[in-house]
Image (cartoon, rainbow, N blue to C red):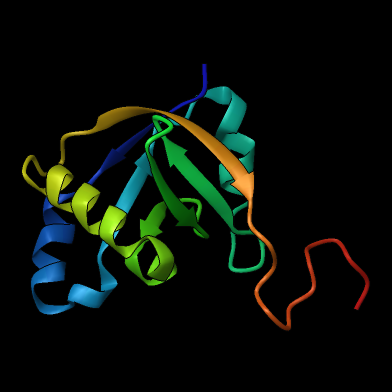
Length: 114
C-alpha cells in the first residue's frame, strides 16, 4: 500500500506568519514503493500527489509540498495546511498516488537531449 506522512512543523508555522507565500507541508516517512519517485522530484520532474483519492497537490521538492507549486490546487493546499497546522509537528498518514506532470513550458523533460 502506498502511503506518506505529511506534517506542518512549529518552525514552519512561525515562518509562515511573516512569509505566508512560502508555506510548505513537510513530506515524511514515505512507503518504500514511492520513496525513489519522491527523491527524484525537482522543478523539472514534478508530480501530482493525490492523497486518499480526494486531494491533489503538485510536488516538485523531495522534502516538502510548497504553496508556490500549487497555484492550480491552492484551495486544497490551504485546507490541508490549515488542518495540519492545528497540531504542529504531528504527522498525519495518507494513502497516496504519484503521477507525472507535463514539463514546465519551455523546459525539456528529464533525460532528453538538449
